[in-house]
Length: 259
Image (cartoon, rainbow, N blue to C red):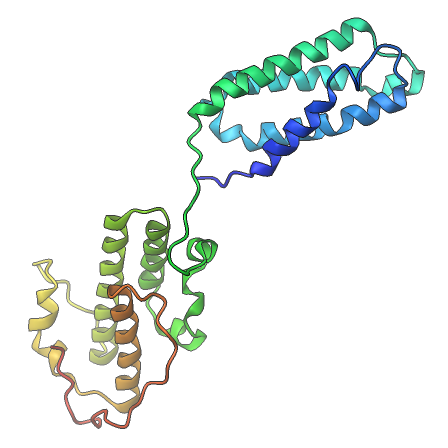
């Protein structure tokens, strides 16, 4: 997927507007001619670069743009400016014809381009969700989160932006699972033994997972992790920042049941 710079298309259309009878004429001053051709040359180059990845959809348009660019560079060659040779009627006609051919080709082929607009998702900034959805998490919390959680969070945010609900749900669930495993490994101080049955119920029925003794810092950290994936599952991403009270958290010898 590639972001489309619509300004290039707009600027190109504006620039080749100079290639008309009112701006190009025979016996035109070379300095004025060079000025009129500078912007069409620049934006034709930008158009070719921008559409390089979608050449299969704009085959005729890119061919016509390349031909127009070739004629613009021939007519506006530095040697003409130095020698003072005026533009000929044949050269004017060639530019007009190449411009018309490009416009007709692009008008026809642009209809097959799959260009969409990303609609807003609630009050969230879609650019942030695409590039850095974890930015609202405090740095200390990010340092505790598993790398797999961050990876799935980014993918879930992209799916949400592009209206792929099934993909979003999948990545949210997998991110939640990574928190479960990280929680177990942090407290048990050993790797989670991969169960033969791939079922979340495995986490709940594990006696070790349910009855591990927690220290006060571990309880606080677990409360934060719980807040994260509950906020995601309930559609309130990102979670609101708030202080976590530990006044009612059991001491280090008290069990914290996962129910």
